[in-house]
Image (cartoon, rainbow, N blue to C red; front, side, top):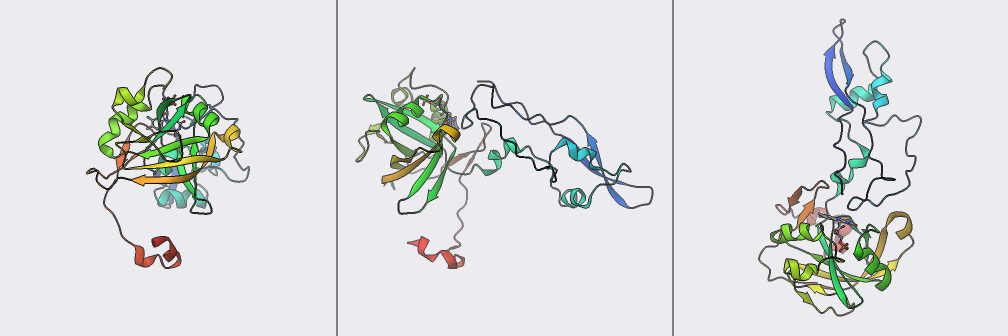
Length: 273
Ligand SMILES: Cc1cc2nc3c(=O)[nH]c(=O)nc-3n(C[C@H](O)[C@H](O)[C@H](O)COP(=O)(O)O)c2cc1C
């Protein structure tokens, strides 16, 4: 699996001064940003190859768009919008890397069981979708994952939330295939019987959520599985309670200090039971 191309910084914005003494912004083009192609390159975690969609709007030059470099009036001055962003220290960022800014949920282990053989994979692309009636969670899985086939066939899985003491093992789980190795045995995870699904709970996890597939309509288009949690278990006895979160490039952050702002959540009191 090749590494994605390093983000190329498209523009270097710096403040300069015109001969009239008025602050202007000069844009020095370095190298144009070239978006990684998803159509032909081998799959990347959480990024199944997709059809490229046209997202640009002709009247809205995108930040990071090399064309922005050409937006100057020709005299070294730039439109007010470009200046305002630069003064606020916003620099361009590739839209293809924005998952690195958003990806904040804890890294999960997904347990599945196909034909009596249990497997594990690592997952960073997930989100809660709905609180209740029924509760729903979404996952993005690549069709190249063996776990994808297991989910497709069985419609069941367990989402296990590991503590950061397991981070190295969890990353290793996400770098090999259940078709080739028994990951439970290799990485020393303990399968425990679940109540509602055949996939096992992960004995070392902080919490395990038994799920059934609720909606497959976005699977072929986005690899997006919508799951209904049908039973959940938490282990209050585990000493290391901090989860870890993938920043999208092989670096992680560990849960930090808690912040209790329940008093301010006046509109959402009912979420505090
Ligand atoms: C930190 C991390 C996060 C990952 N997130 C995802 C993800 O969200 N979706 C996905 O399809 N694969 C993801 N992967 C890759 C899978 O875990 C990997 O392809 C794994 O080998 C699949 O195992 P399997 O073939 O046994 O199912 C991630 C890997 C790592 C290391």
